[in-house]
View 1 (tube, rainbow, N blue to C red):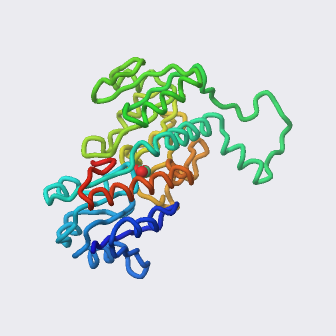
View 2 (view 1 turned 180 degrees about the horizontal axis):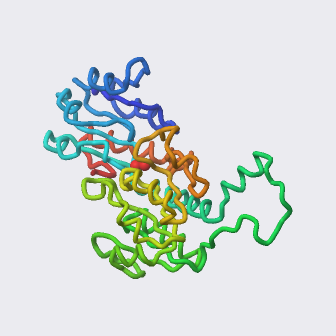
Length: 314
Ligand code: GLV
């Protein structure tokens, strides 16, 4: 009989169905201690774990496991897992890409539009009962999306899905990435992209090379009326540098779904900035996508335990 640890309930019936597919003792985090402590105590004889991006799986946790064969993360990102160390112990790491690409690209596009057309600001004005002036030609003017240049940094699945949306909105598109990809738009160097884009969207994974990739010097290359958008991982932007750049009006605004530390500190200066739209890591947050992610995460885990290839292996 296998032992499987699950740190969070997931949408859909996939976890319940596991019981019919495998002879396993399935243990849910019970909320009594902190998750890390619970993992350390229970992972000793576990065969598989199903975790989320909040659950940091490092050497200490892995060293406590003697039978572990699979770490299935309910996320596309795996920066919370020491993948190399897991692999050195012959533990498979699996994730849930593809099923969340479109939802994430929709959200990223949505926050870009929200900041440039001042949608959130407008909503707040009405809800705070501050819509005092009549319609007037200069009231709350924003920045158009169509016809503008979008620079996409990174051209993986999410970068491509953003590109598709941008083409539908008649944007000019350019991209920069470590490697050239087979896409039909101009591959440019990073300086060119930063200097020429009206919108810069970060579509990178977080890893040692991309940590604080966007810093003050790079933001300084952007146009003063450009916007910076991020919906992949917060640590790719040096947030202190971004705050400084926004304070100095080096760029016009930003839209962020991810942050260096989540949840965001209530004292974070970004919160008070009118030219910044913030959402709480909602990229994949639709019932449809989160259910599909559950299906994939469960299947990945079961496949590894039964000796088959998982759907997605890191
Ligand atoms: C979300 O951020 C994910 O990695 O799935």
